[in-house]
Image (cartoon, rainbow, N blue to C red; front, side):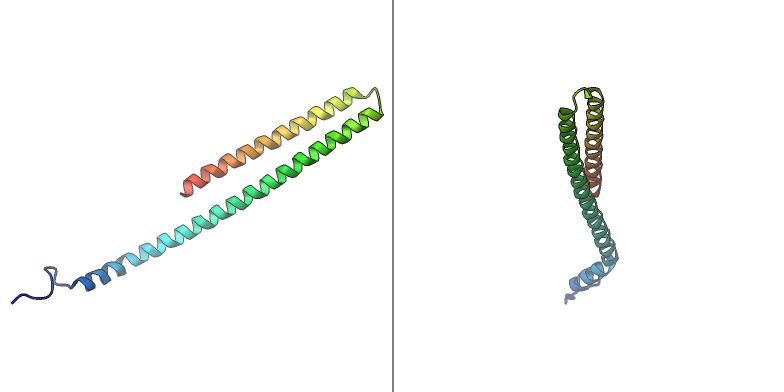
Length: 116
């Protein structure tokens, strides 16, 4: 007469239960790690949005200052040299802000790839 239990001495449901119990801690760790990384990614996305908003504000401010500078120049003839250096300074600041944004976005992309 054949026994209903397989060769290992355990029934299939018992083997599945033991396997599930043995892997549960690892699954919990993986789930916790996944949640942590998801939170980190959400934080990075929020930081990127904040940086983009800040850069957009700075661009607007720079354009406003440039326009004010041009208006002042048109009212005061003869001060073109100082206005030119001020405009150049504003362009340097804008370029620096854009470069900082590009660097931040590149770093965020690198972190996103690492989190995947």
